[in-house]
Amino acid sequence: MSSSAQKGRFKAVLTKYYPVGTIHNLTPMHYPSLRSPSSADAEPFWRVDSDAGTFCFKKHRQAKSAHRALFEELFQCKAYASGASVPELIKAEHGSTYVMYEHHRWWLERFIEGPHHSWWRAELDGVQCRAAGAALFGLHRITSDWVEGGTYRLTQAEIAAGGNEEEFVRANNPLVKKVLGNALNSIDNVRRALHRVRDVENSNLNLWVVNLDRCQRLLEASRTHIVSLSSGNDIGERVVVHGDFHPGNTIFSEERVGAIVDFEHVHVENRLYDVAYGMLMFGTRWEKSAGEYSSDNYLREQFLMGYVEAGDRAVNVQSAEFRGYRIISCILVASWLLELIDEFRIDDFTILNCMEHTLADWRTLITPSN
Image (cartoon, rainbow, N blue to C red; front, side):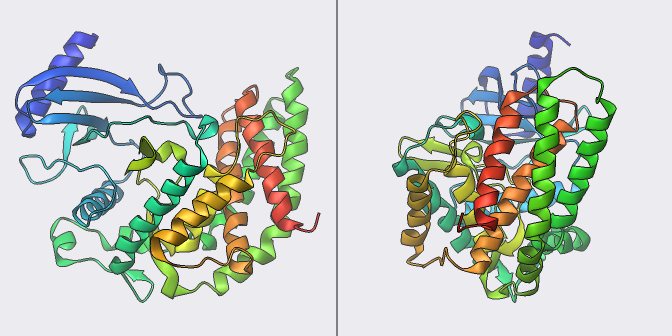
């Protein structure tokens, strides 16, 4: 379908289902990611300029179940209504935020002005990292009220909207119970992928073999940290966490966070998970060349300070529990990078670079005295 024909179809869908008035411009845009680094491959969204304002028209990821999509929709609507820094989802005429177009779910949300950073090459300063920590606490303050006795409870309105108990049970399953097994599976998948391309002449192949060995040793050394964390998790600290809080999922308006986006990984977990993961993602200079130690303690301190000051709530960064969540954060990033390598992207220096930085940080957590 030509671009002009596609625009015409989108305009017809938007004006039929949403109260947007006359549409003046419909512009294709992209959020590049490590999985889809070029704008041609990246998942598109459309900027909609109309009488009613400026919006984003986005396609929901195809792999999602309908129930999971509903859970994310309910989360975002509920968070926005509670005053969280998230984009407003626009209700369609039939009452849901979603419309079906060419067998996909699409939704419309208010457009937030501000730069969108790629997490692996974001150049944020201390003030922005501090603002990010404060924004994260703002989200936790709201979602902590949704969790009772460590479990997210469906409201009558959510049940009426089609809330599925099975999906919400999954949302209540703390990540620490499955992260180790997922990481071990990722290593096995990548070993098989490298075996399939063992005859390829590529200098990065040997580097990946070395990194896999390092990753396997770190996983074995991490086992006791994760097992103890899983058994000793404080349910009183559970909130609905964002689950993937990094620079790419925040939109800045000068020196403050204008919006938190992407709720693909929201679930019930100890709040320390989001804090530890955010410290890693905001406080690592991913763009540095491999071989340089990548952590930036100043940025990490600013992120943590923003979180603590926003809620007047101390975080014991020396505790075994917090270290456990920091280790889990490294495992999650490593596992995701390994998934990309399983797609035969062993030539991608950016992925290799990010992996080496992740392993360096992980190693300091396992052997902090070194």
